Length: 103
Image (cartoon, rainbow, N blue to C red; front, side, top):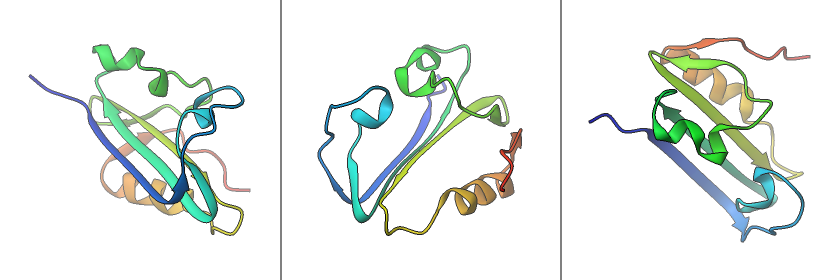
């Protein structure tokens, strides 16, 4: 049986606030010098496809092989952007699909 693959990482984070809507209220909040990220690969026809974290309305259409990719990042105000570097690593490891423009 194939299972989904997840990486969740937090550095200098605090407990979720539970305030507001969406996924950001449910995950650890970064301190000004902190970061929280989630990378998930899942079967789009499997049960994890319906997990709230994989059903965000603004996710790019990214794939690694037959699996969909979810990438969510929260960065503190003093943290340099990590998103582009992580997307580049995922592309080097076979991720395909639309990439947001880097304006």
